Image (cartoon, one colour):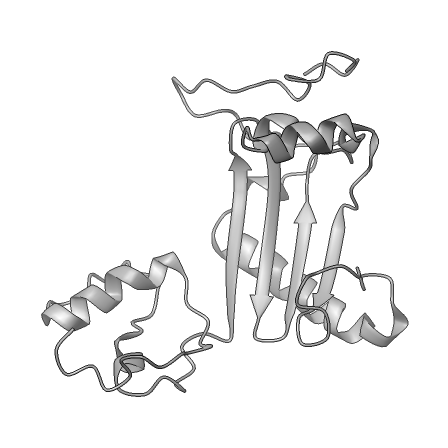
Amino acid sequence: FAGNQAAGKVSDSLISQIDVYPTLCDLLEIEKPDYLQGRSFAGLFDNPELEINEEVFAEVTYHAAYEPMRCIRTSRYKLIRYFDYHNGYVPANIDASPSKDSMIEAGLLKQTREREMLFDLALDPLERKNLVNSSDYKEVYDDLRLRLENWMERTGDPLLRVGYRVPKPEGAWVNRLCDLDPGCTLSE
């Protein structure tokens, strides 16, 4: 990009994929449609210190199998929530690799995963210590959980319907929860 004052510099600004289209509109000097949700990050090319978003959200419902999760990420914290009925890992959603084979062989599928995880990324960038039940982080947890729920409401997230399972997209092929685990007894 010609004239990029920030070339070769790093920015820690939070941006999301929904910010790409408004950025392209700004760079190409095209009017932005009213329905856009994202924010342009074109200003980062002049000022890499610019803050674009206070938080970004992420969601997965289906990858290769059903495993609904939602996430909010701020500059310091990340809260991840899983919404399915089980607490195990979904092997079909882990891409095939020698690492996956080794983890399964070592007993990954017998492990449980917590349904909510809160990380302080300033102190724990590798996300090893779940702080969701820490009294020191109760206010952070309550704030992020409320912000995540408000975002889910604003976007009409179907997971907010109690007991609701999001149907697979029409024509999609989806693995069952137990695919690739011959000892699995769960059924979908």
